Length: 382
Ligand SMILES: *Cc1c(COP(=O)(O)O)cnc(C)c1O
Image 1: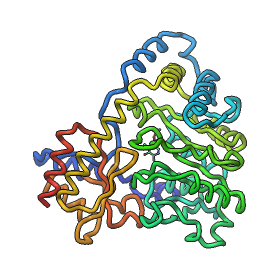
Image 2 (image 1 turned 180 degrees about the vertical axis):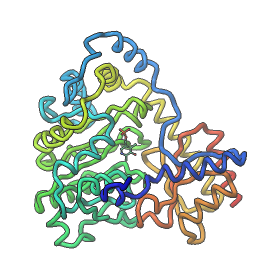
Image 3 (image 1 turned 135 degrees about the horizontal axis):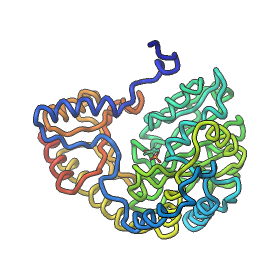
Image 4 (image 1 turned 90 degrees about the vertical axis):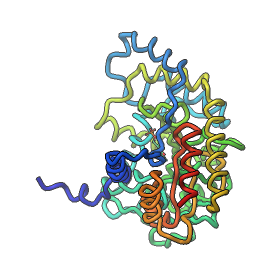
């Protein structure tokens, strides 16, 4: 069978490749410490699980859900945005439920991109921004995230003719993979450019609640952001709910209406029992402080271990990722291979997130303290 061109144009999904390399090592009997995929190891807070148990008993939830999410869910999102960011959202039109934020991110380009249109994607970045653009027939333009610019895109790096063809710009803060933090002033530069050139800003805030210092801002806090921007959010990382598949998009109503039209033709919404459990989670934020403390401790342990071993690493203010430079200028792929071969530690090579990730690797801290200590110890022997 011949695959469609659009499919052949896609790179192999990075984590599938890593899984293969890991499986080989495990088959050889190596005790691999997997710092590859960012999937929380902790269980969903039990109060959310209990809310789900109550919800799943209700026959009214067993039917097809509404496409845009239950009104009660959208109201809970609006309450949470008001409480957390001081942002006002109209639950009618300014909030859409998603089957996880990845689903919304992947569908957005279908709503705005014609053949030849450009989508600005951060590099290094979450691979879905690039692949969704390609699937929709668009052309991804990789905007470098440079360390000297706080891993925030500088639009001066983007040629004028590219900006004029741009339909969407993806942003993601706190950032995966660099764990960088953005300020409202930085967001403002992108909102202003979006108004000047007429593109949609799609901010992915999946890690906004995994922070260790000041709480990160929503891009919707910027004056006028709602004219051009939407924000993707998710319960996945905040409440250890990656398997549940629930997220939301909030912000500009016209952009959301377009996204919803795509979705209406492809999926049939989020199981309502999950939405009801999510309402409980957003209203009560069970165990969230404890979850943050666990990641804070893990980050401290790992960064201290790496520093002792002489690695160049900055302590992240948010996310459960540590992004650090490979030693002695060796390539990220070489270092990741060496770490897996000689230390049994699976790290993600920076190039896997784009060419500007070269020279770095990412460690995801989704395992108990002892394993993180052990990983740092093994890496320091390299
Ligand atoms: C994990 C992750 C997501 C996807 O989360 P889901 O809501 O589970 O789909 C989106 N963006 C980034 C940057 C992520 O790391």
